[in-house]
Amino acid sequence: MWRAMIAVPAPTEPFFLGMPYWLVGAILILALFGAFQVYYWVGRRLGEKLYDSRIGVKLGRDRIAKIEHVVERWGALAVYGCFWVPMLRHTLPWVAGALRVSYPWYVVASALGCLTWAPIWWFGLTALVWGWLELAARSPMTAAVAAVAVVALVAWLTVRRRRRRRAAEDQALAS
Image (cartoon, rainbow, N blue to C red):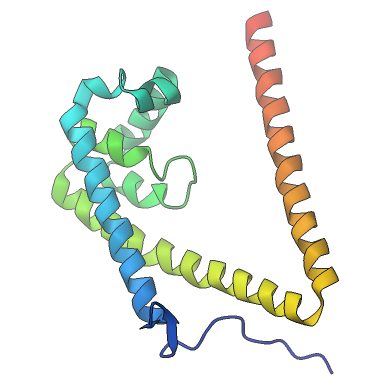
């Protein structure tokens, strides 16, 4: 009978640099929270200069305007929601600072985001890595096939996304 193995290390056993698994997760959550505070204050300090900064130029004025619209509409709730949207996660906090979202509400929203999003990724990503290592220990060929399949899937999704974007740009130019 096939039996699933738990692919997460024991919480109290030494995991990284002799620290238990839960403590490493807690430190990562605090580091993410600290990064979000830095993003906010840099955005607040830059203000309108955000558009002309290297990051602002790379993002483009139209993308920043879309993010501003989300922040203006949803306020601090947008900060919590940005944890769950990959492109917004590291851009929205800058804009929230530039738009001077209420800092106490920003802190609450970013703390709740860190406390809900980070553990899911911490446990989930760790489970995937340990699960793949368990698979590699049992069957290296199957693990290699799984890794190649994941890389192929990511490449296919990237190409598909770029083609859709180009098609949309071409359609916009034709109109």
